[in-house]
Amino acid sequence: MSDFTNELVQHIINGVSLGSIYALIALGYTMVYGILQLINFAHSEVYMVGAFTAFYTARYMGLADKPGFLTLITLIVAAMVVCSIIGVSIERFAYRPLRRAPKLNILITAIGVSLLLQYSGQIIFGADPKVFPNVLDDQTLATLGTAELRLFDVTILGVAVFFMAVLTYMINYTKTGKAMRAVSTNWTVASLMGINVNRIISMTFIIGSSLAGVAAVLIGMKYPKIDPLMGMIIGMKAFVAAVVGGIGSLGGAVLGGLLIGFAEEMVKGYISSTYADAFTFAMLILVLIFRPAGLLGKPSQEKV
Image (cartoon, rainbow, N blue to C red):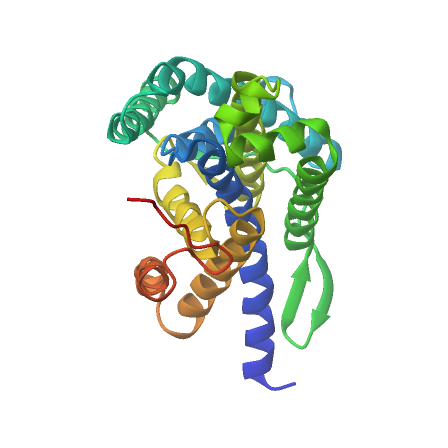
């Protein structure tokens, strides 16, 4: 194989790995939007809390020097639990009292909660970056020319696919999933049919926040530096992924995450890492111009 082909294969592997993480975070954005028509800007800070939860769990349980799949599972569970508590608390105390308020009020509140968590994180965890514990001993599983398929990449993709499959099954084949779809269609009618709308909305925040916790552990494993402001850029990229794919569409969030991850890796590899973030937002602008509903989104019509 030529050097160009080897390099391309390596970039594809890296892009799919990074895109899987974006997709997990984007699912949280798109689920909340599908239910409440709300952009939960605090979602990226929930992801940050998940990373620090895993960091301190590894430290206090003595797992920092015990890499392995058991350590990975333990940290994922801890991050999911804490993130779900943070997520449902945000919904209960910040968004629920404003549910009948104008959308602008809720949007401002979401930004305020995001800033609150950012600066609270700096006070609680310290503003200095921290090194994420060694979760797994990375190793090369296969080589194709000079391209390497590493354990980290396979693990990230496997974990992401597992949780996406569980979410898909839950949405399509469980009572809670059917209730979520009903509430997303019309929550007034859903409540008249006996569905506890508040419980379903809380469950949506729990699931979306849990996925952010999973993504935090995966990103910490691959890029082991965390800080209280780590959610800003990756959160925006995940939001872009949700919009590009079609916000409100679970499949769109996954597609958007993979596209953003792949595009970012290609720009870093063949143009310059300096332009990677700019290219991501340029992609968002192009999609909004030519397909405002996103790649898999359905155009909505408003009655005047």
